[in-house]
Length: 82
Image 1: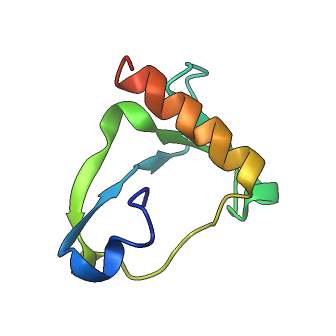
Image 2: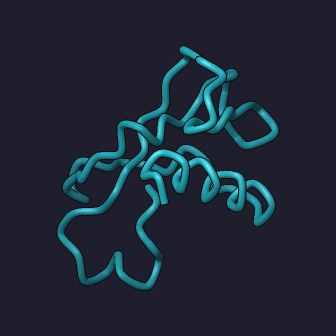
């Protein structure tokens, strides 16, 4: 989920980034691994961001450290051509 924490309590849906084991190595994805809290190497695909009802989210898979969050922001900027 990439919705800002302060907005989550008042929203019914949040922005989610799908995670896949298929790592394409493109700039709009963020490679994740065990050091990020994931069980296996995978990638967050910022080309496929979705709006998801909060009720569909059961648990948080990982929380990125500040430096990795900057990497995620970079991938998001690339995905939306901003």
